[in-house]
View 1 (cartoon, rainbow, N blue to C red):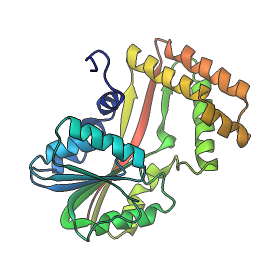
View 2 (view 1 turned 120 degrees about the vertical axis):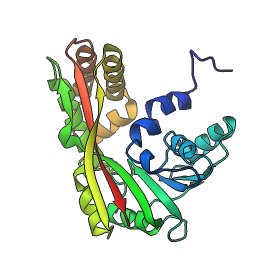
View 3 (view 1 turned 30 degrees about the horizontal axis):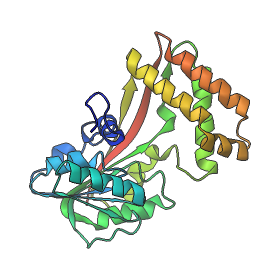
Amino acid sequence: MESPQNPRPIEQAIKARSAEVYADFLLPYLRPGMTVLDCGCGEATITLGLAEAVHTGLAVAVDFEKESVAAARRHALSIGRCNLALTVADSRQLPFHNAAFEAVLCHSVLEVVDDPAWAVTELRRVTKPGGVVGAASVEYGGIIIGGEKTAGPRRFYDIRQRLWRAERIAEPYMGRHLRGLFEEAGFARVEAFATYISYGTPDLVMAFARDRAAECRDPEPRAAVMRHAIASLEDLNDLAVAWEEWGEEPAAFFAFPWCRVLAWP
């Protein structure tokens, strides 16, 4: 049995990636009894909060990754969350009837699909008239890095976005396109805005810096960076150290923007 001092990885993920933080802009529109869709749920850490918000209704979650859906299903069963249904599906071809949901969340998805415009059209198709869609995507144009030694961290994000594009992992500037995508999909009303996730205490800054240093040392991204001649192994080793040094600075601060939309069919 896991002790409270040593939580399971999925419980750590839920704490770090909760609906209260990542779906706070959609939660005010949810009511008990609603049927809500989480499109691109991962391990359903956000979906659990959606299911709680509509507790007498149903939360449906889909993701392309079978392993993530299986892990989410196991955790939902272990905590007795009965109003949550999970299935493997492609966000560009959702296996639901037209107007099936009163609310839809699409977080961190549009930046990773080949045809985001078609994915947004699918979101509109499965949303009931009078329903609402909430979507959020990354926007690297607004990253804030404070401190004395920021050259290394800034170089890291330059390398990461070049790698994302070279490997077709994600579009790092998708956030700025969200309003246009939803307007073009024919939504009657679209509201776009941005919020920041911030790291501004010693513990948060150090944990964030250590995670980025670990990414610099991870064999898989290192191999991909080398394959595309984006940086050398020496560069990545130096960046790992740079992150660790930055994390110890009293003035270190990091803030990451999420662009968001609320849209009504």
